[in-house]
Amino acid sequence: MIFPGEKIQWEKEKQTTVHASDSKINEKYMAGEVRIVTEQARYPLDTITGMVSSGKYNLMPTFQRRHRWDDEKKSRLIESFIMNVPIPPIFLYEVKFSEYEVMDGLQRLSTICDFYEDKFCLTGLKLWPELNGKRYSELPEMVRQGIDRRYLSSIILLQESAKTAQKAQDMKQLVFERINSGGVKLEPQETRNALYNGPMNELCANLARNKYLCALFRIPNEESYSLLDDEQELPDVAERVEKELENNSLYRTMYDVELVLRFFAIRNLEGYQNQFSDFLDKYLIYANKFSSETLKKLSSLFSDTIFFAYQLLGENAFFLWRYRRTKSGSKWGWFTRSTTTVYDPLMFVLSEFLDQKECLLSAVKAIREDLKPFYQKNYDVFEGRNSNRSDIEKRITLYREFFKKYLED
Image 1 (tube, rainbow, N blue to C red):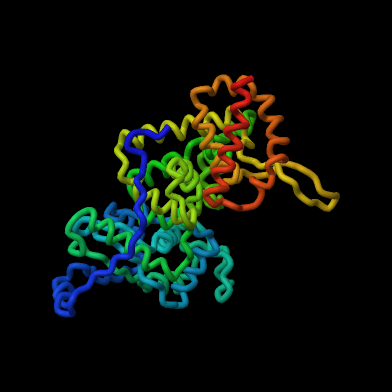
Image 2: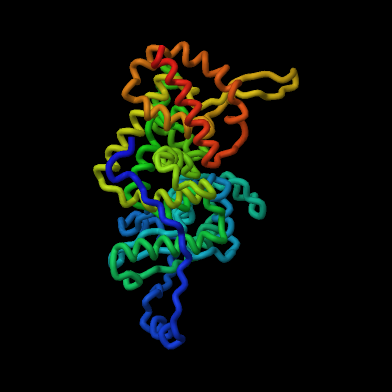
């Protein structure tokens, strides 16, 4: 069932070419219609902790990534300051006069603050191995003074660059895309988060912390631990989750957010023409314009469906029964992690059967056992990484027929 306001009327993309005379182009340039106003600043390293704690700097705007540096990478930055290696500038956006968002440079600022607050020991230094194991307060006096003399440069995009809130958002996203194009490669959902943030993107980010989704994809979550191990005692669970999230690839790359987006996008599968990633981009752009009422219904649908998947198929709901070769011979067995080959079509079909949930739950034992021969019989449809539109539609049809027979029985 498609909710009112959810159906997307897909349009074919057209490349816009505007013909104008040189004089018109020169007029546009001189008027500064598409021009960013900037200024530069330099901050002594020993002032940055106070600067960040002043409340005038937002270190986590929506376009920032979840990546966190480990202590070795942090240490290399400090070693660069010791050696006076040029460090790229950070980028700030002036939200209000003298209030800023950090567009690029979160890790550098966080590292400097942590270093001055003695939150980590230097480690893995190659040119200054004598300093390994030392915190800022433990460094020799001359080394500390040398670091204190260093500066971090910044480029500030001033308020004058945008006349409206929407133009400001567009401009920030544009700059973020350009300054990240030559650095560490952004994952698809990281790019969407930066370039297409809006109500739907924020909804997906919130739902990505759903305890059942986290349990089924083994993403650290305080509430999901009890689902995977009821007898586990976790007195320091919050601290443990925070540390484990740093090393969880699905969380760090925002793939958990993409999982939620995939569920919603497949409800408008006719828009999937070429690359699946492009389809998700286009869907998110459209879906950010959905009404709050439509988003509220979609949120409930996702929450109900992921809970249903957990109830019906357990913590391995999105595992695939597959044929694999081992040293001892070839055999069938469960793949040991969740896969979108199963997640995408299964979530779609389970959302269709929410009204008959109790009937299907009464057949849990039979359904779980029958999934093995189901996957073996249809293995050519589920194996591999094929994810074009026809593949997803075939899997949806197969799951739909599989569950229908239990309703008929």
